[in-house]
Length: 509
Image (cartoon, rainbow, N blue to C red; front, side):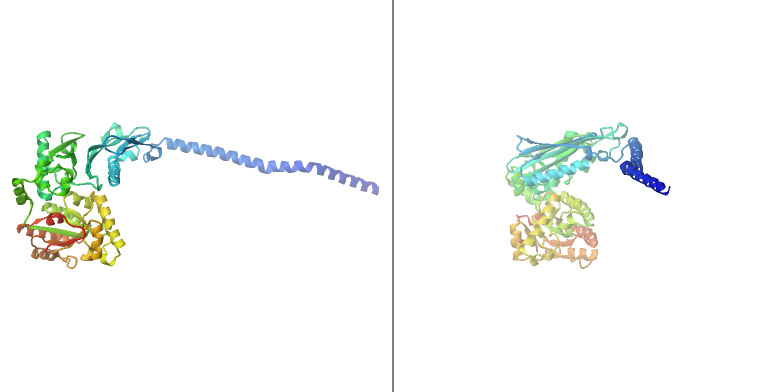
């Protein structure tokens, strides 16, 4: 019995072992599927359903809203064409931007003259930016076309020495409730094709105030007789500032373009005024005028008119260094009220901050000179450093005003043969002074005025600094007092009259 029990026990044990050896793989797989795969798939399924529901809800919520800050840039398509032309230009560049909300077309010339092309591109960029209303960038209705704008250029005249061009922008921006706003705009320029520089009307006249005053009178008369522009509009809109640019119609005719809406004679569009250049020949006896126009020689009558009306016997040049600054705009208003012109020797690093101030000074007939970039003592620098200080500032002045400077005031009046040699290579003249008000030492407007008035004499060059508030406050006293003594206030170019020689220093005793 004991043996049998033992055998039976052993038999069962072996069977158990046999069965276990065959069932082990199936049991492990079942465990993996049951304990790991099925829970993972369940979690994945639930998560996917939750994500789909959440995404659908979010999309519906966003679709129900109007987009008040969507920009068109992400959906804009750009098309660029470069076309051969037969109008004395090298190429015509056409850029077309198309989006679901409208289109913008720009067509501008490529003259083949790099400074001119760069200037035109810069102006096109500024016109384009200013002509697009805020609704162009920020869309108020995702489904509506809210803007359309075009910018075109027209070549008015070109010969071997000059090129005149107009830029016109036509824009319509659709706003709320089917209202819309137009943004028409026109600019025009004349360039010297050899230097690539833009030429201002001021540079044509030997004496700015007399010549420009007569030009303003003639243009006003034409607009009054031809278009019935009111006297108030003529006084507001036709000034030396608005005649700052001109176009060459032909070698005998100068032209200007004006906005109809500004003149009160229409809602859109513009009108042009042309004047025979011979009407001003006695004012236009310099090299710049003769390059662009056929200037008749002076006869005895016009020569006498020129000597009595144009050349002043008691002229003084007010010069201001170290600007432009925070007080320069106030100074410009004072000069304008007293019909006085001045010369500003500007520091290059200040120009970007006071860009509009420098443009205003140029437009109002003042002369801009170079006062270096960082105001160093030039004789202490090597030639490369001297050129960099001056050239960087000249480039900034030209980019801002359209006209490169021809004169430099060395900081502290420090100049030597090394500096003069560099100025000669850069076609620049040095301008010093004959009266130093020492306004930087005595910040007292009454003292500054006394020094300027006490030392005044015909042909004087007075040194001041428009970065000092007390100096700007002294200018009305200087102007009023010296005006009573018969003095006129002119730019350096009009004071010295003769063409200045590069690499030479000038001052008047």
